[in-house]
Image 1 (cartoon, one colour):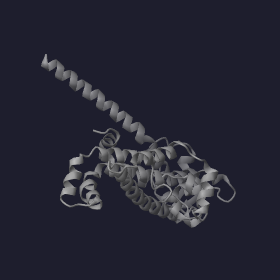
Image 2 (cartoon, rainbow, N blue to C red):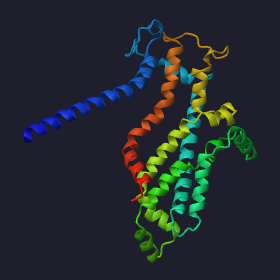
Image 3 (tube, one colour):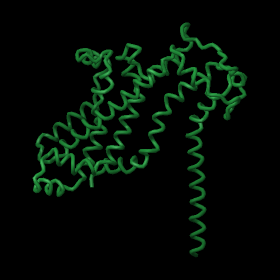
Length: 295
């Protein structure tokens, strides 16, 4: 009987692992296909001979994208990195401190202030009123528009606050008995216990900032301030206009066409943020569960 159960569980594990591998391949396939198209020679690519694996492997398309000044990829990448790093650090700081204050039971105004945050999350005034307000604060064509307005996301604030509510009150009482103040309580007691939730919401903030397109498209007008998403849009979507039309080029005997260059731009855009996930993936499940249910 035990042998049958053991074989049954082994069969179940085998089927489960097979399904997971297939799902993983389906998820990874588009990413690999874009990379292989970017690495293929333009001649077989134009003839439709590239179905998955690259034909005539080369990396000239990436060099051409970076070195050609009309694409402005290097500046876009640098701007996106700066916005993402500074914006994520600022958002984590403001969100965590706000969540800490709203989670303190001795703060008598915590309930109605939390309701105000929820109202701003549910109701959106729209783009035009937002533009008028941002313009009054000088955020138009200002890089701070990528950092300050998005410093608090109500959803992530709720997750962080719920997580902090789950920390036993006895720790706070013991810290106050030892003579700690609120800043020391936050820095020495709560912050070391919040690594998981900080890594989780920090990753969400970083991804949201890196992938942000509408805000920079509306408010960042100067070419020196544009993000990689705006650069990608100019390369992939508006390439049919007269001043950005792609022409086949030959670099060191390698033919490059619009499919090479578009795929290279897409791959360059998604690669940095994809590289972040393996380092923080272990925090996702635990962080979301800890921040979703008080207990």
